[in-house]
Image (cartoon, rainbow, N blue to C red; front, side, top):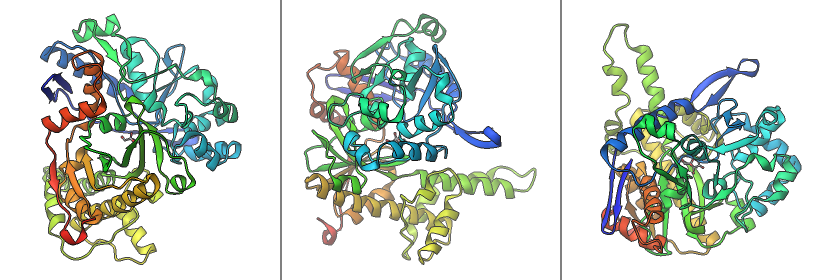
Length: 478
Ligand code: LRH
């Protein structure tokens, strides 16, 4: 994504888009391991940067990605295939870490909600099977890409806050966690804040991509940290939902909240750009819908007659058609618990939704349209509960909810969110993550005043990407 930024200008240009498909590979004893195709991504990144360089003179490059996952290296070379956080190996790590440090103590020290795939649990699982013995460095995914671009190792702080190894209070590595888990502290490179220069492109890479010596700048490398920079929050009564694979639902605070109430509601305190706190909860997201569509596609392909065209198979995955049909559903559909752990691994979501309904004595959705409606109603219902919890636990009154990311384009989801939360929904921008990424680079490069606060950056976002407003029904309004 190419960003054009300056005083009075904030524009994004799509340069390249490529799929990010997890890969299953048999390993230890034939059990499947779920991995990221990092090499495929790296090759597509090279092509994308070359294309960007043909479209504009690049001032800076910033990398963000999903959180928690990492590559292990020895003397600069990758050892093993980076795991996908949805791989089920993490259960072993949870057990060993909790045996050393109880869950409530972990929360007090890190402020991080328990998610079984937090980096600390993944590294503990690696430790338990001896994988860490072969590594001298762990780089979170954007930092790994940064190393391949520049040869420089850093750990960007917003993403580091998702490892479960940082102190909630100081924002620095917490020595007692390394000591307690015996994860070597030396695995991690020094912490840097968003806005720090990482280094210039390695000459060999720059030459092959047809680029000059472009600097790489650390941004909020956790995609959600960049997304929150790109939310045009107006005041402290506004919450956000970063709506993509996950729904990250929360508020921005200036200090962490690590109370028992925050822990039992499973709210996390992740580090934001400019040392803000992203006080939020992970709720499943459009992953439920994309996995359902993948299931329907696979079934349609399997049942298509040999030699027939792919029309039937592709019809199942037409999102716009499915959403239009879901909007027409009039009978009440099941509202299920979108955070139930059965929905975390990849697979047949319609069947899992059905089994959840059967177990809870609720009538399961009958058609594809009803499944889609049931997913969206369930997400909106979860948002409503979570926003009420966020109010209770943070002490903030929430009157407005910004929805950014892919879900902001889903009119039905935005409408249901306004209805079920009883709050005004302001939808967009869809590319909040890329916007937050380029704004932080532009500020660091002096294309915007280096003294610009996040509020000043967000004012630019509001002007360039005016949000779409959804009103709750008068009776439901809070
Ligand atoms: C969203 C996200 C989220 C994390 C999850 C692993 O892409 O980064 O904030 O919890 O992926």
